[in-house]
Amino acid sequence: MAWTWRFESSDGAETQPAVEPEDFPTQGDAESWIGENWKALQEGGADQVILYEDGTEIYTMSLHPQEA
Image (cartoon, rainbow, N blue to C red; front, side):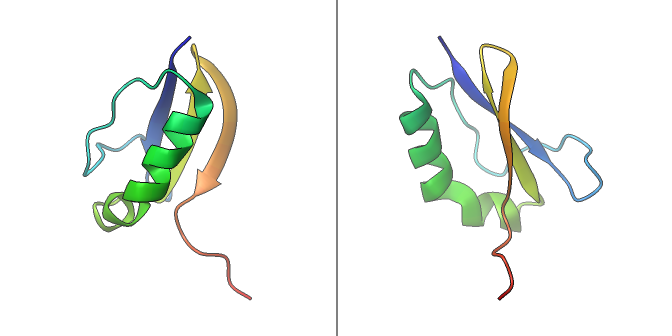
């Protein structure tokens, strides 16, 4: 199994990440990586990420903090 991220701009278009990811062996590894790199990814132009497991979309997550 491989876990991968897709990076998108605010209009949903795929964008190149500021930090190049790898394929991750577990969901936890992929999520830890995004937790360590989300700010650099956001500053590089990514607004949201989509997590995939072997090509199947698992979830979409914004890289912007939720407003209170």
